[in-house]
Length: 508
Image (tube, rainbow, N blue to C red):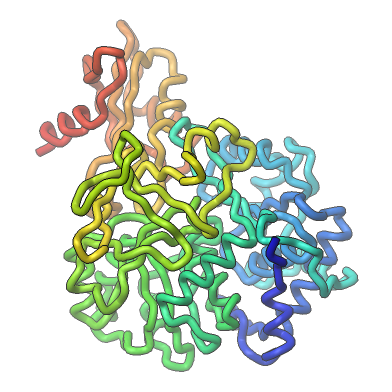
């Protein structure tokens, strides 16, 4: 059993004056010495609230330095940090909270009103945390708490974070990220992107996404670098930050949509990208034209492949190969084993499309309270991704398709079963199938294909209203199509590939 060490405490002892966090919205700077004390105060609040080893702390908040302090405070007392997707609806959040059974719910000023009935429903105490430097119950409690400077005894097998990813059954699943996973991923990422104590990471993606936390924020804390925190994604602001030589941003990750919006700004042509050492695009396949557009102005973007269950990193295309290997997601990171497996369980050969299977210290040991999913998604210790790829003669991997039905819209995973569950609950719906269709702006958007019962009077507005009441906005289907029948096989299973081809032909 490998012992867990306190990264913040270590850097505070070695380099207390080194910048740990810059809150871009307020200009507030936090050194590692100060962060160590702030984490100690936050851990004191958790202890005073009775939060201990294995307890879950649910957090509903915009990105802010406070979330990092809570994350590391959870580690210090052995609790599990559970950042919640702020884009989810109240029913979706309630399902997750019931699943987590948190000992404490924290919500910033933007979401506090929404969190009140949710916390009451799951019988968990609620505390308001800081928004833009506003005094809250949390900040007051931190100021009064007895600090906790030392971490409880933990091993790499202990859970540190739970991040929910929607399952193909329509039920969100909490991917368990252990201390060992986060450590292994920090080493993985640092090894291929030149992270050092002098690195400055720009935090763009939300911290409720694994990429927001673990590419490159937590690896930056592990190595002793600095994180610049932004509250929201503003393409013009991103370019200003990159161009600021005093900030010296060296690393960031974004989804393709972010880079597309950046490329539409006039400053995209004039920004100085020379200080950037590690820039990744993930969350969805990046169009080759976009990658070439970025390269034309000196912005070298490396494609990457991963998922919540893998921490997220699996494959990364080195910066040096970015242009010669456009379309590839690169090669495996150090501490992850990758197999391409045929449907019969045998290993695929060169250039043969097969399913990606994963194993290693950066892969989740399983889902929170999902024994069936753990049974179905693993085979002899290998995690089955449901994604298809091939490997060329030089060892570069190319993602071909997703064998599962999930599609990606604006960097957000959308699982059709969730949307189908909502629509099928409406009286008058006989059948429904949701598919992802190409979209120039978002990569993919949803198309709901519906067969109504005889004499049903449901219309498009009824479908949209049901989605609005129960689903996050990014899950709402852009297109709603009423059909007489849906293509099915002999067993009655809807053939989504055939349906997608049908819809695309009709819209051509």
